[in-house]
Image (cartoon, rainbow, N blue to C red; front, side, top):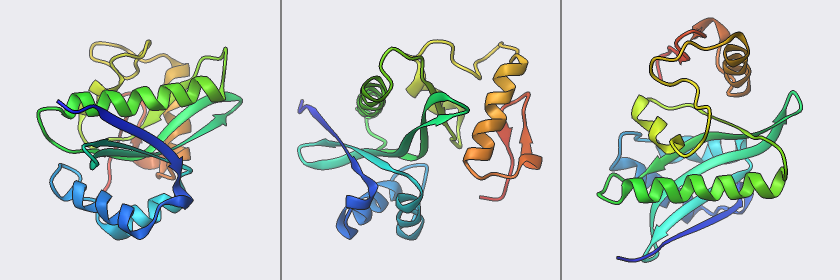
Length: 173
């Protein structure tokens, strides 16, 4: 088995070929993101983390490291992992890279991770983190629900479509 090579670069450094490669990867997965959407998202997010095996793209995440209300945060705006038997390995490699970036950017501080996904199975990516919200059989506190609202605002989603008790946003996309 080949090792997974993970690299993070500034989104502004991505070329058309790399964006096309991301779109090609998405065609085979649950998130059929098209090249136009991915291109727009590279303008909206700061960092692009890619995972490759034998030089072939197996997964990516577009994200940013920023403070929300003074709290260090890693916000994943878009991600896709190739659906293979090594999917979890690639997913862990991408998340581990983002965790390392967070430690370097915010040493000695707790960091909040935020993401949006179209399936609850994506929570698997965060299994290594502590205090995962939302999680099954957990009733969110007021502070946890407030974080949900902050992320809805950061993602530019309409607050009226957000159910803060279920951590779910409804929409047509």
